[in-house]
Length: 248
Image (cartoon, rainbow, N blue to C red):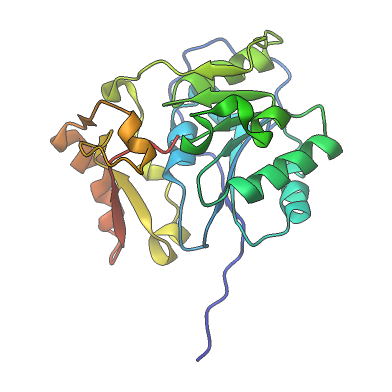
């Protein structure tokens, strides 16, 4: 049986952003920031990266999201990231991609040591100091980084980079976050799993799971939540996965 072939890379270009709150930073390129992760398969899509992108405010026009799969050669990933000529590259690190992402980060720092690498995600939020990928990167944001990633990017791009390497993100109020569902592309809607976050924090405390270390569980207000992701299902048949923990 013939199988349909898809590109390993998906790039999300910017959409309209009407609110500019912070002062404009001079000298930014069109892709000063690249957000990236390595999905286990093409069919998966990264909700965490889309949350970061959705909350970049005035920096959003200067950001691209580039998703890859773990089977792609590290050199190919690094080449495609550097083609955007970024100042900052943020990686989402998870249990399924930490080995491959470590290889990518190590190679990226060898080829382009001037690029600032920021790590986030569950796999680097605990016991961070001892991990090789953390030792190679420039910054690590633990916890919910929706807002702290924006703040860090502004500091770096304003030549006011912090000296602290591992920074704990402050708790976020879900009401203050921009939701990311409008950044699912037509290709996502047709061919990929769409992830929907109904709440943050898991009410169950399974000992084998990292989520058990987070003691809170905050649901979204149901009416607002439904109104934001409902347009995704208006396009036709869509496969949704409900999440109960943050992916940033």
